[in-house]
Length: 128
Image (tube, one colour):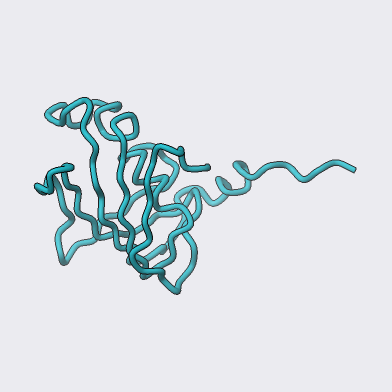
């Protein structure tokens, strides 16, 4: 799963733990803002949110943005409209052409929801 070039990812702090890969359950604190800065959604301070990376049942831009992130890391992800919830019609009140800005903190990678996903998505070895 290679992130689309329209997705802007900035590492604010590099973590020191394991790297997030497709098939992981990523436990995060997050804040979602509009471009103007007003907060749309946020995780509860005492209850981080689990995201099944690669399942495409969350904001697709966030799932891509978690890839390669280390536990303890913090990222800012600018998600274009085609990679937000609008595509999935989960939150129809969001403007169809609006960017979403996520600030993520990866708390833990406790388990895999699909342990074989990373292997299935890896390119096959060259034949020789």
